[in-house]
Image (cartoon, rainbow, N blue to C red; front, side, top):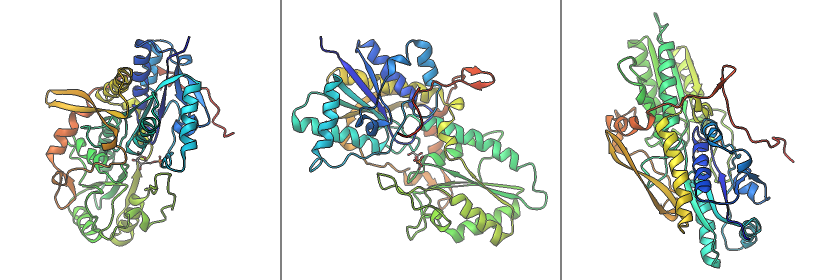
Length: 416
Ligand code: F6P
């Protein structure tokens, strides 16, 4: 008898809760009685080599689901791979459908951000073009929080929580000294061309923490002279100066600040430059031109891998979008992504919908201009009201020998 199987892949930069979405897809597929639950080893790129994982071998019971939820990075392995345009490249698409047919796969799920949703768009378009019956659903994920239509993306709340929590610690540390002159700390935060993640620095403000002195998002032009004048003034007034900057801050002429240093020319399959190093550029300038001690902290992968401090709200939503994507595909939906709608912010209440992938793939949603205040050096209270509910709650790691336990795929990390 023919089997009813599904396949799920993870794509793009990992998050602290990308595996919760995987757990959601797996839980739904089990509830809906699918026979085999395949995982793509390294996304669609691995799938093209028929590199499949039988997820049921790893996720056998509720305990494994719980461990998967507490595991950072993409359990199945990720990729940054763009499917080419259909015209002239049909053999790639035929190969994907051939692998699906051979393995009796009815539905394909892709957990990813705006670039990754392009894969769902292309595959569902091809299925329609060729009258194929397989279904394709997107599961939202990105720490950048820049997907349109959905209120926010799973992964964002946890990265925001890590940023705000660690920034509180950095601010405490930096406040220890500074009798004569302050140390100026510049913290560099990911997010590419969207400032959502850097804005999360504002969440550190509270009764016990004054928060960063300035916050710079990539949506506003970065004025170097104004920045240096502000740092000088702050250093004359304060014993500690801490500034949050997005990795993607740009000068008015379009140059990234990180390019003013020795940033690499690396460009990924989607044409994205690797944006890294602007904090070093700024601290070098502060040291040499203002004669101040200055330290660059690049949160880098830490901010998207910190499952030990993930937001429970985020974990639960990530699980639910995975679960609902599987349910929607089972009901016959295709070429869509699950979205989160906030019905009420306080008390926090959400609803889930599905939306046409064509309006989502490859589209970047910036932080609203009205939320960027003080001449581009801070974010408004509206942002704080928006983001605060997303960082609420914790899920205790499963501690073994003093460290969080993870679920690990038994595949070689050596390249063939
Ligand atoms: O898209 C998620 C993200 O973490 C961005 O914020 C960041 O610019 C990028 O990925 C980094 O990608 P990589 O880890 O491939 O260098």
